[in-house]
Image (cartoon, rainbow, N blue to C red; front, side, top):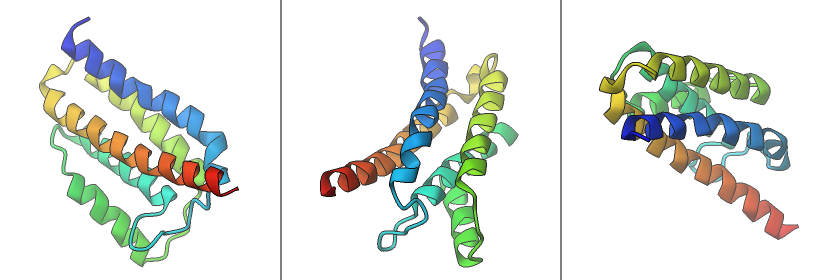
Length: 134
């Protein structure tokens, strides 16, 4: 398997992660913001904004995605977990379709995957913490 195909497979794996996360996300207080950190809902939204950005251009600015979430946070917007998860999946499918023939986005895609893994790790750690407290 080529490096590009492996990268596409890694990007597609997010769909499996979201499918696995759907029933678990309700185990944690997904709107709760521990300290200064993003809530689990905001983490997912940040991942979605980042992939939307890559869909619209080959440039990826992770700071911009985080700033968008911060703006929503300060507007005290009510977000629905199901619509965020569905948007994340829908945008990932569109991104995968777009990337099939676009190896020029290799660096941006690798950056996105690394970023998403760190975000999903944060959510997994919260779920594990809650499960060990019970």
